[in-house]
Length: 157
Image (cartoon, rainbow, N blue to C red; front, side):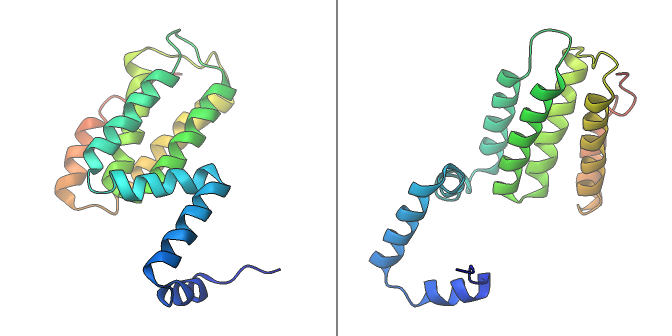
């Protein structure tokens, strides 16, 4: 069976009454953790982007190692997790706060990549994603975020 397009699903959902829509959402949340997490964001965190970004940053702090080195698998896991929660938000400012916090933790904790090209490339990719997201913001916000980024792009791996 081929999945319907977003447009077709939107039309079908518009025709459902309140109870049927509620049942569809609950049933959807039961089948996949990602659906449940997205629904949690939409219902409980979407109105407080700052609090959401702070919660994600706190989780990043807990996941990063306290040692001065990081294994590439650990870094990959954190980046994948972080990307998922950024995707839930869809807000550029939240994305920048989270990505800058992630990179800032490497500088503050003095985490080295032990000459691992993969980890160094993942860090560089985060900086590129920050720059790309920053281009789409208002110049005043760009200035604020560029100030927060000072020292991140020259960080030696």
